[in-house]
Image (cartoon, rainbow, N blue to C red; front, side, top):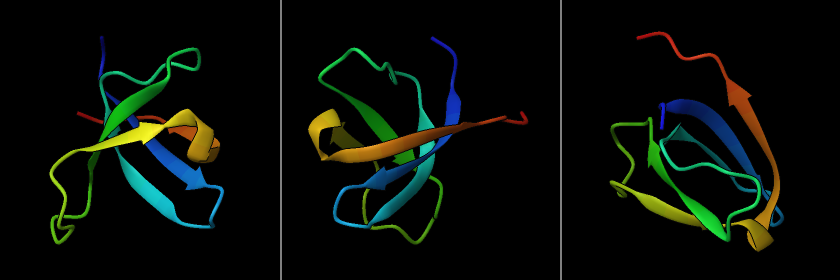
Length: 61
């Protein structure tokens, strides 16, 4: 799958900016790689039930 840049808005108000190779609307969840180099996570598994919205962005490589 192609890499996608996205913004994940969680139900609790938190936002996550990152990239994903595995995003899919009909999966139980997907992995996100945070864009911020200072983030303490290398990869995060995001469960759809915790997500309010996902905004897909254009990625420039």
